[in-house]
Amino acid sequence: MRREKRPPEQMNQRFVQPRSSQRYGYPFYIARRWMRSAGNMLNGAADALSGRERLPSPFARSPMLPANARFKNLHAGRTAWVIGNGPSLRAHDLSRLGGSVKFAMNGFHKHPQGPIAQPDYYLFADGVFFDGSANCDAFLKRTRATFPDTTFFAPWSAWPAVRRRDLLPADSTHYIAFAGKLHSANLKPIDPTRPLPAITNSAQLAIMLAMYMGCQRICLIGMDHDWLAAIGRETHFYAEKTLADHPVAHGEMAGWRYIDRIRDAMELWSGYERLNALAASMGREIVNCSTGGYLDVFPRASFDDFAIRAAA
Image 1 (cartoon, rainbow, N blue to C red):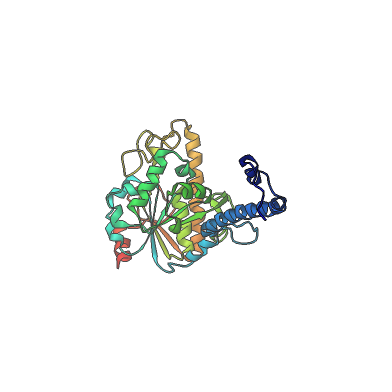
Image 2: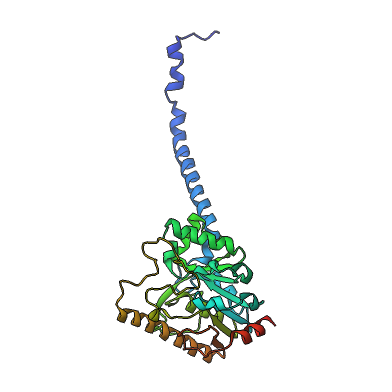
């Protein structure tokens, strides 16, 4: 029996009007869309887990930054050099540091012997380096290019910027959380898996990390700390500003009263005194091998003697 033919406009209605079976299938369509959306979210969360161990843990009693535990006693018994950026750094031959553990910071990549020294660790303790400005991003990328094999430390609050703009290598960048202040906090054993007392400069963080890593002797160079006596001139081994044309981090203290500068130096010196006392209680030694300068908290030592000993 032949089927009755219908006009074309009636034939197209079968494709336009939904069938009753489609109404029953609609909940499955919604469920499928929801599952795909949830799957995409889970994939994103799984990708984020690759760096999650470097971020604060949501559990109060667990270590906030468990990835930092790998550094505990990593360099037990060795000599560490904390390389500041003061003018006296020009007087030292950094190639003589040999195979000792080296910490550098901030603008050290400007040093002509930087590629020779190749610090093991590079520190950025100030969050201003990650404020998103073009000159800060260029500064960090230049540092990364100069020292491709170093391990970086940064404030954990900088993690979103580092990851989003690929400022530092994800696999070799670790983060530090801060709470309280070094000059006034109850100084407990150094543990970077948990918040450390907030420091006044990056050198203090380097000293704490060196102690956590088990370094027996910590030598300081390029730490002149002479800015109270050098108002109006640069106090780095390089002539230019650390961050050129930055509206905030311009390296000038023109708006500071002298008494405010003194108070800032007092907090810095007090922090050093606490670190020196902690090192002594642990049987460690911190010596200042800088040429000249005002940092008299630590005993003075000859760069030549310790450089030769470190290279031996």
